[in-house]
Every structure is written in C-alpha cells, then in structure tokens.
Length: 417
Image 1 (cartoon, helix red, strand yellow):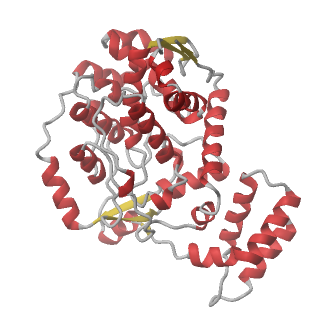
Image 2 (cartoon, rainbow, N blue to C red):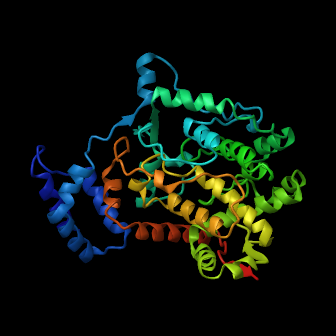
Image 3 (spheres, rainbow, N blue to C red):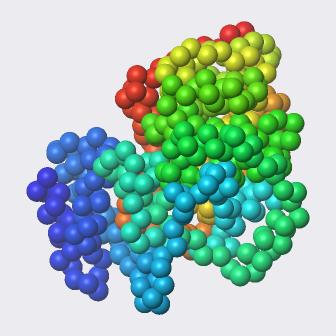
C-alpha cells in the first residue's frame, strides 16, 4: 500500500550515513509482509510498527546492502578463460558424473554431520538462477528466499580442505555402478537439472557413497535412484511409462524402496505423519512397536502402495541420509528456522526413540554454533529471523501440500497395527 511505501521511504530519506533502505530492500519487505497473508490494512499496521520501531534498524544493522557475491564469470572474462560448466550433454554415461565438495566429503568421513562455522565462509553467487534447478517452478517470495539460501559459493580455509581431502582418501571406494543402469539413466531419463548447489548428479553421488559407507547392510542404489520417480518440487526425471524397464533392472527390495521414496519424503515434510509417529514414540512406544504396515500413494501416478513395518523403518533411514545433504552449512543456531534442519532433527529423534536408527549418522546438536560471521546476509533473510521458526515450518508444510495438489497426488497415509 501507499502508506507502507511511505514508511519505507521515510527510512531512505534519513541519508546514506544513517539507517536506510534501498528501493530493492523496500520491495523485499513488502514481499515478506504479503507472503504471510497480510492484506492492505494489516500491511500498513505491520509496516508502521516495523518502520517506526525497528524496520530501519533491521535493514541497516542486520542486513547491510553490501552483500558480497562471487562472480566467476567476471573473473574468467578478465583472465580470458572459459567458464567451466558441467558437461552433462557430453557424458557417455551419467553414472560417471558427479563430484563431492568438501562438505560432502567431510560428512562421509565422519559418518554424520556437524556445524562448519569457522571453517567455511558463504558468499552470494552472482547470476544464480532457480530456472535450471529442481526449484524451477517456485514463484514469488518463496523463490526469492530459496535463491538467497542456495545461491551461494563456499570458501574454505586451505587447512580445512587439506584435512578433509586427506581423511577422505582413506575411505574405501563405493561400488561401481551397473553400466546398463547408467545407460538407462542417460538415454531414457532426464537428470540434466541442477540440484540445490550444483549438478543433480553431485547430490546423487553423495547419497550413494554415504549409503555405501554407512548403511552397508542395505543397497546404496536406492539412494542413487531415490529421485527417479519424482522430486518434491514436481520434477520427474523419468516418465511413468518406463517403470517396467526400471523395475526389471532392480531387486525387489530396491524397487520397493525407490517407488516409496518420493512419497515418504513428502510425508516427512508435510508433517501429520511425523506428528503422529512422534506422539506414539513419546507416549505409547509399545503401540508404535506393533506397527505392521504403512499405506501411502506413489507420487508419480498416485498408485496405492504398501510398506511392511520393516520396510518402512528402513525407508526412514534412507530419508535421514538424504536429509544430510540439505542441512545448513554452518551456524545451525542462527538457522533455527531452516525447514530441512528441523525435519532432520525430528526424523533423527524419532528413529532414536523408536530404536530404529540403523544407518550410521552422528549428530550432536550441542555442536551447533550461533555465530553469524561468515554467513550470507540479505534483507529478506534478516527479516525472516524476526519470524518465529514455527511459522516458517508451517509455511514449508503448506508448500508441500500445494505441490502434491498440483499433480493430484494424495498425501493421505494409513498406519496399520
């Protein structure tokens, strides 16, 4: 509204040496207010409070406009060098693609996650676009927040990288991929989309190698193919017509886990199933131990599928490993509202309480750091810190429901005892 803009303009008129907001920052604040359902009248009131009480202070003190972005393209032009990109189209076999960055290597070495505050600095990534990623269909404010959080470049201390690489070299190599399966993924599927922070295959490689090292009694191919029947944002690497071809190349166990993965992922993020399971784990563990099967609906075609209790607990262990790759890089306390960190903690706690944690995942929340030094800061992210984490988690749950509704996928589930 005009009144809201007036409040923001008042802060800008205070001069460059005082608390002020740029035009872009004003737009970000308006976006933030609109996202949480504030109408014109409510937006005026909220903007008045924010603008007069702490809006300008938050803009200047919490989110200086001088956010640093890494522009490798500019450096390449200055040096007369080409910009290195993923050569996906030139790959003879997609299974040969994928690289592990220092964080992923460190997680595999440790057999778990840890807060990397003080070891890595996050810069914005110039020219980062969601259009080529699995978040391609996000719009409006959610897209901008995801872009702020994922459009980053990591800078490590040299000593950190040296230690990580030396330790990783001692980890036994993961099993070689089946060539026929790799060719199927290359020729019959579309894995050319980028992931959160790199090529899709970087993510699949991490999941596969972590599983091979720390969930040895179960097939790592489940996590290598976990997204082939769909990701949480309605991107489908494989068409449903090709299911018979894929199924013929897998064991019965692998197929059961892979077809259920996209669905269980959504149910973990959506909330009600996790709330029910956690409630049982805390108040009636005997009842939880009597779980016999779980009925859900497959994401790619909404087909009804059943998992035995044993298969379901194994599935949740695969989900936990998968979530490792989405955790904030550092300063977990400062990122307490992060939906991925929140879901990871919930799932880890559930598996521990139910005595079903079977994969090796070391997680110690006391290691979390609240330091903001080295973290990327934008006005949008700074303002979101003023919103309680519970509200942010609710927004994330609603987003999953919207994705499933868009493809007529049912998030209903049945727990049988």
